[in-house]
Length: 235
Image 1 (cartoon, rainbow, N blue to C red):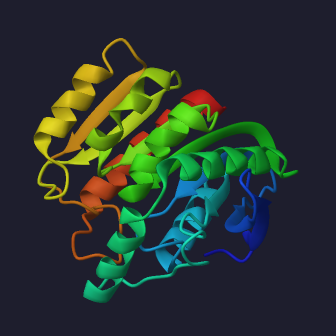
Image 2 (image 1 turned 45 degrees about the vertical axis):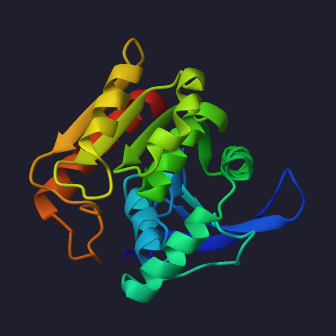
């Protein structure tokens, strides 16, 4: 990434005691809208940090909170069988309500970063896609983007509390997200500011260039749609 991107770690105080870390990438201009970047089950790893830097190049103050901190600080897993096993275990033991409180504190922290222009959105991938959906309900973001979110059907009660614009990216051939869940999301969000895009021939994880399922065409298309969606609410 470009040398004029400034990246560092900050500490955020939890509302429930303790504190957690978050990775921050500031745009070259030094000023822009805030964006909470929500990790996969693999932690705030090299890929997620690169995503933050990618969005920083687009002018966002990008911040990725350490979601699993109550179980293990600064989880950083590889995209292999061992990483998958460990990540799924962390996800299974994640308290969604405590995580929602952490998302809210992260949004508050982003708004207080001098480089942030005030408005904050969220974007998340896989588990982070679920958390971006949760952030739309509980964290006070102005807009939300969710990539191939898993376990949405287990947390449908959040839908009633979502009033901000939300964009869902799903993969047509996703082995982890049933097409019935996509149809139910579409039905449940009728009357709300919601857009759902199903990317043809794509698989789960299509946005991650570190995974075998990476799909350049789907990733590029989704990225363009994501940037338009974010700036319609954050400009």
